Image 1 (cartoon, one colour):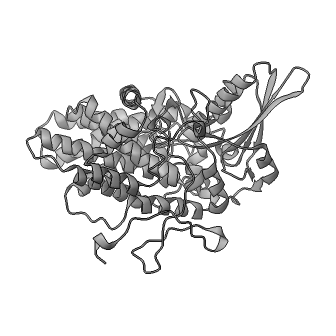
Image 2: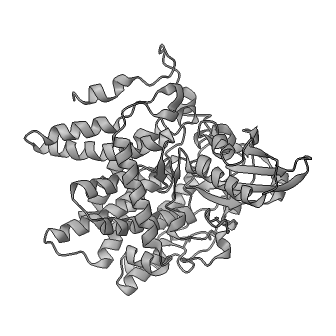
Image 3: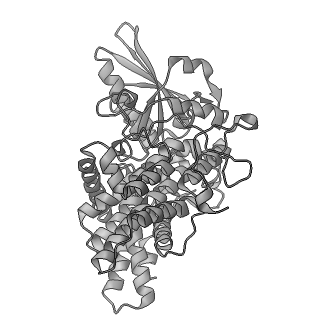
Length: 516
């Protein structure tokens, strides 16, 4: 069927057995269409958030909830927090209790690792009591990924399920909840959505084509007037995280008895070593890879250490990929800050579609929702930067229509090869394999962008299709492989007969790397 004869998708829900909602493609004779999503696509301010890790969903989100609750209960004498599902399963490793107790002093915790609230596996209940033990206030919150916090309902406590029973059908309830601005504490449903007329990427692309605009121009036209200032704030935090992480060589602080070795500084040393010698083609390629690994791992190691600010892009667990890729061009190609900000806007709108119509929560859809989406964001952003570099070098700029198409193709290529990626970190820590996975997928982002910009790609799959495939695939994953620390690497990491149990040996670190 000729491409021009294919109409754009319009939202019409289709449900199959077991309540599963699947995408239907008009290229297929049955005339399938996208299911409706009632989620709001909020400002990029809610996508890129600055804060402490190691987990945006298990550390940052619960802390935001505690801060909101604290402000609502000025007369409280003590607090009780009940953590459900993934928050309870991996909360200690992610410092969930520490983040909450830092705000709600002396808080008592109840852990419910085998139970889930109905709307999302990252559910929590906060209670405030006065000195006579009278209940002042009780709230239900859901931390749904990327530091996003959504309000629940006390009626949810009557619908507690066994872990693993929250399917894509019941999770659709989440789409009716609204994100909360952690600074104002105001649910974003009470504010107008800047993207309310653009529920799918196909709608955004259609607008860009009709108005001869790029994705970053789309963002600047429809998002908040100060969004570029926020992007600048986030970019500065990203740079600081890279530079802070590169200076450190001791094991990642929050890795506990794993004693996970930092590797960023060693990759940087190797790249600098190559830079001091006569460069051959292979060494030039290696140097690029080492630098990308160094910059990306520097941020991920900082996140894993919970020792400084990082930026959710889209989450803390995947926070190294976008900054690492951007810093490479900033440092090596002297790409100016202003161009980086535009690239972050491009990557942000790609991630926003995934957050709205899919998921950016490892506990909901596996690591594909975190690292996979981060890789797509970085790949699209790199396309913008590559076009800038080409123009700076004297080449003709791509048409705005072509660059938008290339950015979508890069995002698709990045995420489709991460479909099915599991979230099963050892000991529930955002360390192994999370840190090194950020580095590996940062390299994939470069590959996806390069393939897209080569003009030898296909456009058989759209970003909307890949996002929906990702979230359905995520709900097909067993709960053991969705940030529960109950399966995969988390379950089998101690099989080897090693003297110190599962301790990560430093022989895998800098000394061997420097002699490669």
